[in-house]
Image (cartoon, each protein chain N blue to C red):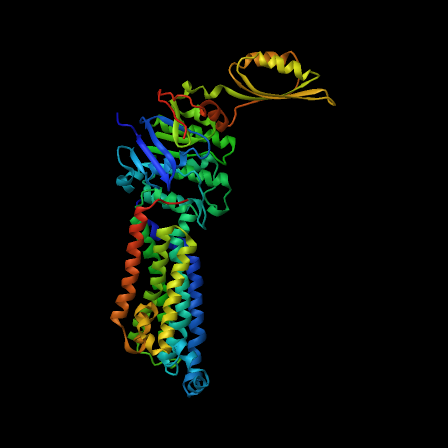
Length: 266
Length: 316
C-alpha cells in the first residue's frame, strides 16, 4: 500500500482539471496565431505594418524578427502569450503547493503523517515542473504540427530548444513562488514573488532592447536568458538554459532547506 | 517503562511572548492522558511540538522514545494525529483522501476504513469540501485511527460532532487503550476527559497547574445551578442558600409581576442539600449542569494553588 511519490501524485490528482484548462489556453493561443502567419508574413504585409509602428514599441515587443516564421512564433507565442500563460500557471502552482497548503491547513495534516518536509517540498516542485513540461510539450507538438501548413519554416530541433527555454523560464517563477511560500507560508507573497520575477525580467529585457547602455540589464533578466539568442533560429543557448535552470534549482533547494527549519503556521 | 510521551522543561516562545513555560508531562504507554485547559492555555502548541509541526524554544520532548524532529517520518508513521483546527478542502473524495494518507502512513488493514466510516456514519464518496464540519471531523478521526498507530494525539477531537458520534468516539478511544495504544487527548469538554482518561493535566497560560489521576482532580463536582421558584421570597431564598455548603456565586432575582424568583449559583460540593432546599419550594424550572471546563478550571486552579505534584505554581 505504501507507494512512491505520494505528494507528487496527489498534487497531480488535485490539479488535473486546472491543467486541462491551461492546456486549452495554450492550444487556443497557438491555433489562433500560427495559422494567420501565411496571410500576414508571407507577402511582406507584416513588414509594412511594422514600419508604421513606433520603433520603440516594436523593440519592446521584440517584433523585429516577426516577418519570419520563427520570429513570428517567438514574438506571438513564446515571447508573449505562451510566456504569460506558463508563468501565471507556474506561479499559481508554485505558491499553492506550500504556502496555499499551509494557509488552508492541509500542510499541517500532511506533515503530521510520514512525510518529511524535504520530501514534501521536492515532490511539490517536481509536480510543478511536470505540469509545466506538459504544457511546453503540448505547445511544441502544436507548433510542429502547424509548421508546414502555416509555412513557419522552423527547424524541428529548435522547437525543443525554445521549449526548454520557455519551460525553464516559467519554472523560475514557479520555483521562486515555492521558495517564498516555503519561507513565509503566505500565498500572496509567494504569488507576488513568482509574478514579480517574471515582470522584472520582461521589463529589463524590454529596456535593454531600446537603450544600448542598458544592455547589462539582460544579464539580470531570466527572460533574456531564455530568449536573447533566439532559440527558434539558433537552437539551444546552453549558457542561458544553464542560468534559467540553475536559478530554478537553487530556488527549489533553498525553499526545501528553509521549510525544514521553520515552524508551520496554521 | 519508557513513557510514550515525555516532556522536560518544554518551552515555546513566539517572539518574546511565551506560549509554553517549562512544561513537564509524562504519559505512560497504554494509557489515556487528558490535557485540559481553557482556550489559549497552550494545548495545541504542545501537541504541535510533539508532532514536529512547530519546534520547541527550549527543553526536551520525547515521543515514543525519540526526539520529534530527529524521529522524522518514521516516528510520525507510528502516530495518529487530529489537528485542533481541522480544515479539509479540495475536490477529493473522502475515500481518496484517506487512501492518500494510507499510502504515506500505512499500511492500513483491509476493511478498517470502511468499518470506521460505518461506525461514525460518514459517506466516503462525498467530496471533502462539501462535507459539514462534523463530517470533516469524522474524516479527521478516521485518518488518525486507521493505521492503528501506537500513539494517538487528538486535539479537540469531538468538536463539531453530535452526541451520538461523540459516544462512538469515546468507544474508539476505549478500544484503542484496550488494544495497547496510548492516547493523548486534549479537550475542554470535561465529561469527555472524565469518561476516558486515566490521567489528566490541567494547562493554564502555558503551565501545568494541576495534574493527577482523573478521580483525584475533583473537577467533576462543580455544577452550575439555574432555577426558578414560584411564589418564594428572594431574600429568604438567599439566606437559605447561604446555609448550603459549597454554594457560591449566588444571584437571586425576584420578579414581582409573575411572583417567581430566579436564581443562579455554582455548587462545589454535595448536591443533596441543595435539592432538599429546592424541594421545600415549588420549582418552576431547574437546570443543573457541568460548567465549561474553562470556568471550573480557572475557578479551581486559576488562583495561586499548588499543583497536585506539590510544586508551587507561580502566575505569570
